[in-house]
Figure 1 (cartoon, rainbow, N blue to C red):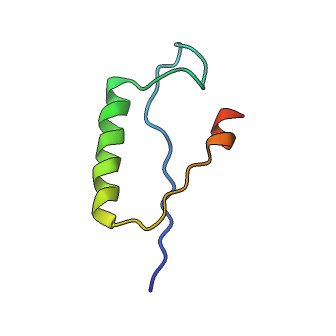
Figure 2 (cartoon, helix red, strand yellow; figure 1 turned 90 degrees about the vertical axis):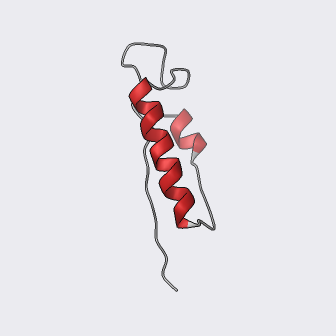
Length: 58
């Protein structure tokens, strides 16, 4: 049995709108996020971990 770890960053976001905790994604960022979602669906992941606190405190 192999273990694979995928490290994924957020998609592209506007450089000037809001701060890190409130700004959304650009259209490119949304397209890229959907691509990553589809790729990960094919992998059949057993666990998905999001470090929300690290993101919100950076």
